[in-house]
View 1 (cartoon, rainbow, N blue to C red):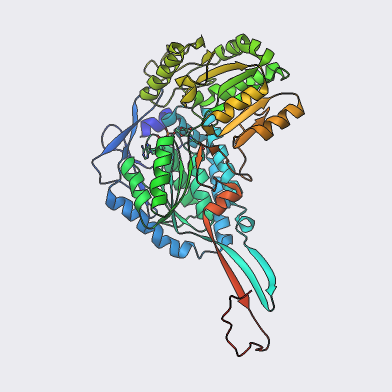
View 2 (view 1 turned 90 degrees about the horizontal axis):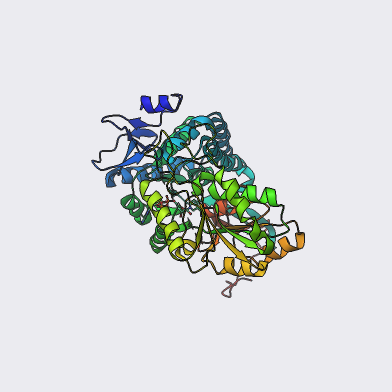
Length: 519
Ligand code: NAD
């Protein structure tokens, strides 16, 4: 552990919570405020995507340990839910400062396990930190509603109350941001939590909960279990878990939504995407192409809001050679190397899948304008690298269009009119995000009105909403009806209790019992 930490210059203040017995240290569980070694014999290796060296082993948490995590959360709920809102706010205020002070160390762990560049990893933490900062406003966010005099001597008011034990299941691509979309909002509302990070990137979560403990989070309020399907099934089935936040792929998202809902839980499920950028001929060419390249290839295309499909309208189709030139200039390297623009993809299997989807496009008639499949990064020959790749002449019927590629591959199409572009986007099964590039307000307005996607950018390539709004992916990108963070996030993690009260100075009640429905 020390060697890994030293090679990434991680200060020892937050420990990564790993236990070293054999070559690779095992990541711990976090149950009832304690970092403990799992008793399991079953581990999953976590690799550095730039080298494929094993950096940690993630335990497949045993049933007893998972039950202990829920029991701890259930017990902690009794006191935490009765803690004053000001106390919960104070924990969040301290937490946001600790996170701010440790952004660089968190970023190093993210780069080590996930592969993204250090600067991008800092952005990962920052976007999660903004959710924590927003949670500090819980004193207004959790206000209920009141209505005096709904009848004679009668008033009504509603409280927004926590649900109980809640749970989150996170993906690999944002190791800090997405866990921070989940447990801070739940906990600041008075819930307690069992979090299952992605088994591919556990390190950031372990640091996040260690920092939360330092901020004053009482034992048992947040717990971390690890694993894959068994841990997911446990969360979906456990009768004490009231709500599940999921972010990840379609297969897992649909499965968790269905299984969790069947068990009477609230589930919010953010899933895959295919985000289109529409480039109008009146757009500012230079800034549009620059934004497009950054949004397609940043994080090696492993963002659910990556702009993975570019639809060029009319004359804008002539900009393809310039797009290729700009993309060629990106530097592919290990994420911690200074000046790297994009790092490796998460695993050899992901690399293989990405390359085979590119090949399928070529086989089905697309033209490969830039091929990053055979890239070799000196010093990191074992890494899972794919360089920026661009396909043109792509048609909606092609597999490379229908599937989410989730790699540094930009597929491009050309159409004659914006209406054609809108038709393509609205026919695609996903509705996560889209962006239009134009200098014409009326064009932008028409696009905004006609497009059926949950998040729209106008000259903004990755329109991920800040936490005063919510993350509002739609159609095939989302299951549930209450989105992550913002007002919707508070609603997801609270239930309403409405009180109707009558107080009379003198008893003027009729002696005859009212048997009709009171109106
Ligand atoms: P994933 O579905 O493989 O893993 C996500 C979580 O689900 C992990 O914790 C994993 O252990 C669990 N899991 C995996 N397979 C499962 C299965 N078959 N049944 C039950 N649980 C399972 O996703 P990933 O590869 O880690 O993340 C990438 C995906 O996440 C992409 O599709 C991306 O678009 C999506 N994503 C969506 C958003 C969004 O907000 N819409 C944000 C980030 C990522």
